[in-house]
Image (cartoon, rainbow, N blue to C red; front, side, top):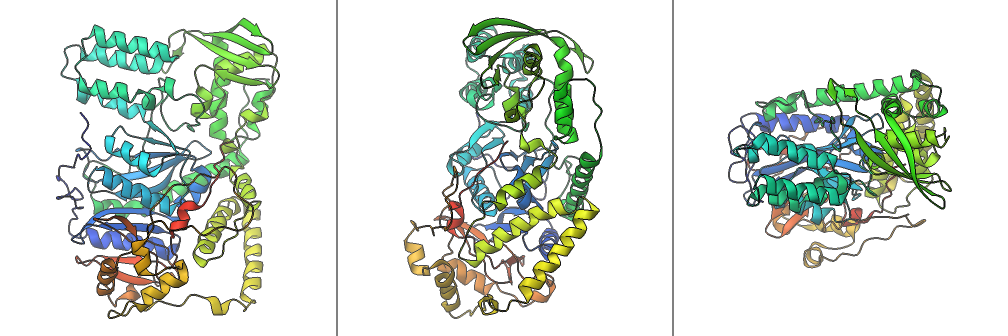
Amino acid sequence: MLQEDARFNGRGCGRTEIGKLKLAEGDNEVIHQFFASMQSKNPNFFYLVDFDEHERLRNLFWADARSRAAYQYFGDVVTFDTSYLTDKYDLPLVSFVGMNHHGHLVLLGCGLVSDETTETYIWLFKAWLTCMLGCPPNAIITNQCKSIQNAVAEVFPGTHHRLCLSQVLKKIPDKLRGLAEFKAIKKAIKKVAYDSLRVEEFEEYWQKMIETYELESNEWLKILYEDRHSWVPVFLKDNTFWAGMSVSQRGESVTTFFEGCVFPRTSIKQFFSKCEMALLSKFKKEAQTDSETFHKTPLIISKFYMEEQLSKVYTLNMFKKFQDELKATMYCHVTPVKVDGSIFTFEIKECSYIEDGKRTESKDYQVLFNADDVVVQCICGFFNFHGILCRHVLSVFKFQQIFEIPSHYILDRWKKDFKQLHAMARSSDDAVVNNLPERYDYLSSRFLQLVDVGFISEDRYRLSLKLIKEIEKSLLDDTSGRDNQPKLLCFDTHSNQNVQNLLVSQLGFTEDNANSNSNLLPVKRRGRPPKKGRVCNVEPLVRTNKEQDFLRSAMIANEDNVLQAAPTVSHLDTHIGQGGINLMGQYDQQTMVNQNGFPWIYQQILQEDQISKVPSVRRTG
């Protein structure tokens, strides 16, 4: 049975030691150098540190500026990857990953964790949510782990949650290998998962498998059945878009973002020493793919207009996925079986063929077609899983002499100019905010999005530079706002006054009433109301007097060695104590250390409790 408080075995450096992150010699230095380097290059780099009650490092979270910007585009569906939290690996690395418009993985944040408890995952999810300005994803995919499932339910209550099918199936050997008919049982489980097109089919096949192999007393299969609504495709194919982020049919596979970078014996020091180069390599690959999709013309294999239609708007990779489905229509035979007014029911028989050296099974599918609205629904659910029309629907279109894909089945998310479209949509709905922290984060996010569309060609690059100079001239010539520039906060180790003033001026409350009142009212935004906003309740982010005393006493004077190139930095420190999670508001550029001599950089921008109230709209099409 799954254990909620399962812990690592403490074998390698980076593993836990009684609930704390075990660091080898030099790990402190290399982590600090990595964070300092990333923040000096872009102050929108974000990280949080979690200490235990003895001020020992327990958990880390970080996300660079590009990850934060990418979430604005590709944060509708997120995978929380815990592939490296096994005895096979020394590095306790977790990551948040999305899918870009090329169908490639993009990094949305990373962490190092000391254990696999619900408490740890709640801290990590809240840290990530704070980093992303309180905007939760529409859907999240995780491994099968009771601690993760509990944390998702608490931190992302309105988010659709599914378990990664490939990760579930990978556990079969560990859980069932000792059974006499292991191979037959493994094959039966996969068949039930992949081939059930209707819920009643799954229930029938599962019960038959349990009875045939006498598995009624197997605890793992009991848990698997209880979680069936979260991992079996037949329960997940309706009404939720999954962006191709998880396996839904045979032949599909899932990779990790750091594949080829992290190996079983990779240490913390080795990972951080090459992490920045790995991220740069991934970015260069994405930039190259962006350039190719604008300048290369895909090969057209048919004379159907729908193929030419999508070749002009979709990225090369996503067009290739559509093209594969179009080619597969040659294996599909369409038969009308029922007509009810404008609703047509078709049966599609997909013939057996050879794919990747293996013969597929012949199978029957059902497609419903509404002729009035040109709306289709296939029982395979391929469109919701991948955002691409399946071969069965395309076969019905051909049968009905419909050769142009309806606009509601052409998702903006897969278009080659998706970033530009997204940026224009955002510009028409600018937020009006009254405080410096939110202005900073909002402007940073908007300009990072423009970077993504400004570098893809020489003409756009030159235009961007020209416009930047015009903005600089306009802003620097205006001296009216100079008196409002934030001043460096100087801590007095014998007084709380500076902290008190900061809390009063930025948040409008004092330390005393902050600690005594957990139901803080959010500041109302001005301007047009958001559309279909969803919020996540992140607890008030205020430090206790004890923690502030510790931070003041931890100040050191060697600030010159840290981030000299960063006039403003963006970060929250965090500490989990008996009272739950407390996220510290950011102060001006200061260098702090814990008792182990580990320096951390704190930033000026306050991540208020109100951040969690920022409404968001996720666009999937």
